[in-house]
Image (cartoon, rainbow, N blue to C red):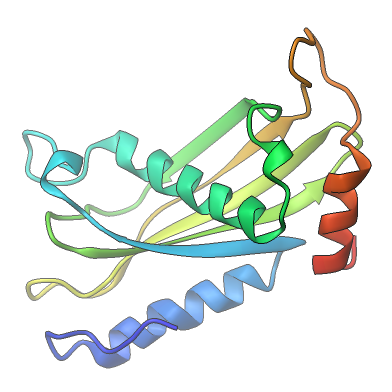
Length: 163
């Protein structure tokens, strides 16, 4: 749960938590991650560099598969597609919530969606900063093409959802 903001934006911060919860409910399985925009995450224009969004998304994806107990996913699930729509800027020191959900599990691929919200910060309201989708494929180590997901991955997802 996202707590109250220190700049009296508690209701607005709670709105981010509500939006993230609603988004998580839309998928097969999902996870939420909170971070802050650090100095290294900014560019010369003074807001987030575009790469930070994907780093936060990947961290939320990693959290999801650790929560599922499926560390075999890592190294065997390269991205074969991704898209990001940037909606608003994020600034140094701003708290950020990233939510990732699995939308669909195919025989050898998974489709994900994500949203990244900025919390109230220095007089700015909470905002949907970015959203997008990506697809991973199961490509076992040493293989050159995709293969069906291992039963361990499918079983972990079935325990978490109704796929």
